Image 1 (cartoon, helix red, strand yellow):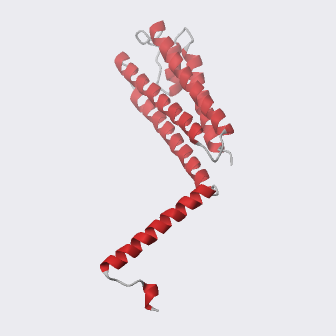
Image 2 (cartoon, rainbow, N blue to C red; image 1 turned 90 degrees about the horizontal axis):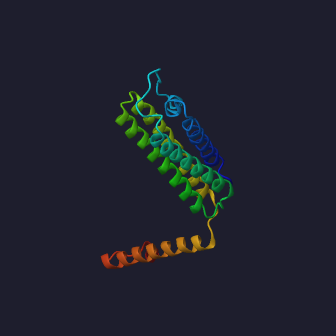
Image 3 (cartoon, one colour; image 1 turned 180 degrees about the vertical axis):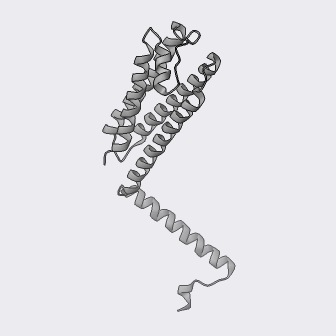
Amino acid sequence: MRHILSSFLALHWAAVFALLAFICIDGNRGVATALGVLGVPVQNTRFADLENAVVVAPLAVALLVVAVLFCWAFVEALTSDTTNPDPADSVMRIAFISALGVLSLIVIGGAAQGINGLFMIVAVQLAALLASYVAVLAERRSTVAAAVPGNGEIRAAAHVMAKAAAHNSSLARISGRLDSRDDR
C-alpha cells in the first residue's frame, strides 16, 4: 500500500518551503514579504538589515534545503517498499527536523531584529509541522501493522511464546503448584 498521506504532506511542505525560498530571494523586501506570507503583519516600515545579502542568502539556502529534503521524502514515500520503510522514514524525519530548525532560527533571528508577532506565527507553523509528522507516523504504523507477518516474524513470535510457557511452567514447579492439566 502506498503512503498517500505521507507523500501528500511531503509534497505540501516541499512546495511551502520552496515558495518561501523563492519569495525570500527577491531583492526588494524579500525577507519581509516571506514573513508576510507566513503571517507576520508587514508594515511599510523597513526592518533593519533584512535586505542585506548576509541575511537573505543563508535564509533562502536553508529554506531551499528544507524544500529539497521534503521533495526527497516525497520521492521516497512514493517509491518505498512497504516491507522496509526505514529509508523513507529516515528521510522524512530529517526533513521535519530541519524544517523545525529553520523555523526556530527564523524566530531567533526575528527576535534579534525586533520583529513583533513572529513567535505566535512560527508557533502555529511548528504545530502544523508536528501534526503533519504525527499523521505520517500514524500512517506508517498502520501500514506496518496491517502487513502480513513474514516467516521470520512468525518464528520469532513462536519462540517468545515458547519461552513464556517454559518460564510459567518453571515458576509453577518452583512454587509447588501443579499445572491445571496434571489434575485430570
